[in-house]
Length: 185
Image 1 (cartoon, one colour):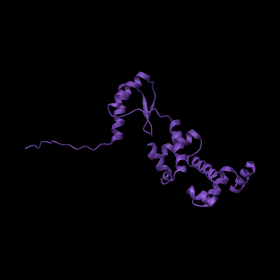
Image 2 (tube, rainbow, N blue to C red; image 1 turned 135 degrees about the vertical axis):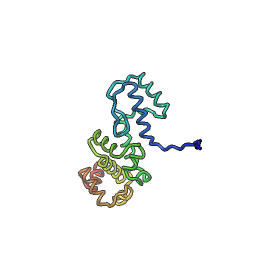
Image 3 (spheres, rainbow, N blue to C red; image 1 turned 90 degrees about the vertical axis):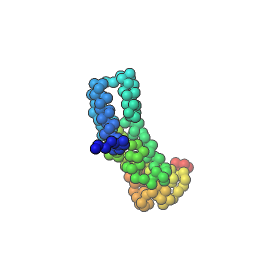
Image 4 (cartoon, rainbow, N blue to C red; image 1 turned 180 degrees about the horizontal axis):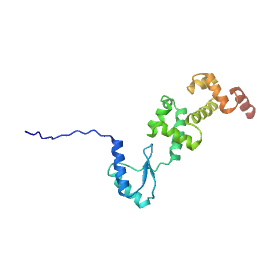
């Protein structure tokens, strides 16, 4: 006696399934392409506007949406998130790598490589620059002490902030404040 199955459960890898759909559609249109680490596709053949619209229509049937994000857009978003992280304790609660990956949907390794390639500096160095600019603002406009600024920016110590400040600006905090005071008078 055979058993009739009325219900079948599935498990699947959504990324692999989407990749297979994309691969089949691109090949059916004779498009030459490579998949990149970021999940995007690097086109090796031309695709006009009409062809792009047709491709978008077909991909939408599978719940896949084309995104026209450029590397510059992504780098701009990284910078914005880093500035927000310095200005918000909520953002600072997360590690930068996890924050960027979660917010942008890419691996930190990919984002870091893209950022460095585009800006000629690392995410870490850019974050230090942003933190030092914020420290200047706190010291000058909010007239916080160095200890208060270090605490506000989550530095491990006043010495750590002082060291980074000197490395970035070429001045000690005292020299910087004296210079600002002289310029204001």
